[in-house]
Image (cartoon, rainbow, N blue to C red; front, side, top):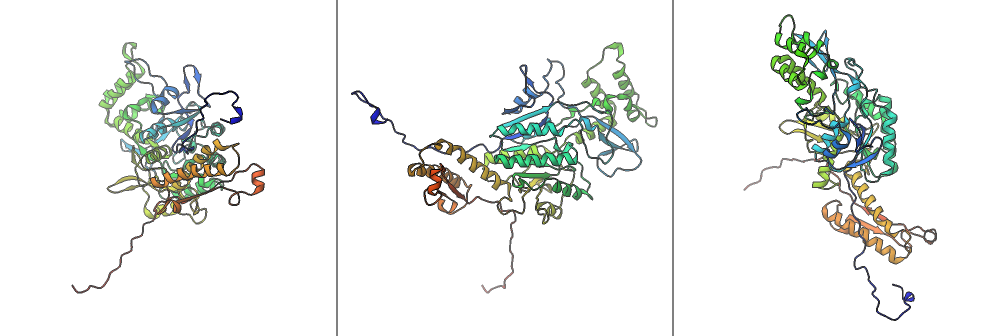
Length: 527
């Protein structure tokens, strides 16, 4: 209360703040997923091309998934990829095949029906995910009714580059997301995938609030002999801007997201069971029971068909070949990009240890297989690249341990400042937290009292981070310093122009990526 405002006699109360302003840490693990969903509507409102915040998988289902019909009807099918079994003259080079009646059959998808968003969101929450933003850029497109070629990469023409970049642009208005993820990015052509990645990195560099988590084209079904070509192509496709805001994981992971009840005969040959008959009921090994069931599917006795589940269970009981086909197709459908799972891993690590803990040497929940098992020497070429400097984090299998994330680098792998994901994400947290807290001092008098208040506020925050293990140093003075004042960070001209400059220096902890043990023999000594 200003004394000049007191006009009449009486008693007046003048309250004073006993405590200074404080810095509150911003959220560190809020991914934004951009892609295609079964639907995007809730209570008559469209959520297409809207950046909407959710907190659970149930909330995602209520807005972006088909509603389930009333019991006893089966639950709605949210994602239904289609696969074809194409006979080959010789054993296929990749592992996407099976032997039926002595012949080799490649398991090939209809590329127009392959999407990753729905399963990726479930993988994210299975790994401890929490808050997230969803940008649905559209729903599923029509099938092509044909299989892709053997050895080709999946390119889904229903996945449109402009729709994804427009969805990404919506996040320019959102400060909370800390990760940008496009699960279907690898379904674009290599050229369009490159455009999307460079656009994401440029936006991250501009916003300075989020990192980009990438997957590699070719990571779904890599050739053990030529997989390095996919690595080189990725490095050539990411440009040079914003590399410290990007990270990549290789290869894809085999998961348990889709269950046996999610795949049936409607996912084979576009739902045409005529193609199943020669496989389940060959002349060399007839199976009249399976043939009868297939006939009844197309021509129900009495005109009253059974449910898909009932027919499917009957075929499984009647034909071991059919059961084997479903098992192999399910394994193919469960191969997913690792980016969403890594977003969940980062969320869990942040909650348990802190954003400064590297999201590595940990497992991905739901990951049960890898399309390629990288050796230590093979990973070396991914982790350190002397030409481009772009590091790629490997997901590897270790005997007796299982599948582990075995890398913690950004794409700027040769940078001493921004080599590690944990360093970049810690700095984003510190910068944004201090930035938001300092906004309360905008338009305050640019004088010593204000400078000292800002210094005390930021110093208190950094001291807390140091005590939690986020900064290194034997003392707080070794861990950070905050300067603000005339003659140190500002000149007289700065004050006249309205600038208050604050300099913050922090010693961020770095992961021990290489642990070297030195052993040496010494001569025995007398006892």
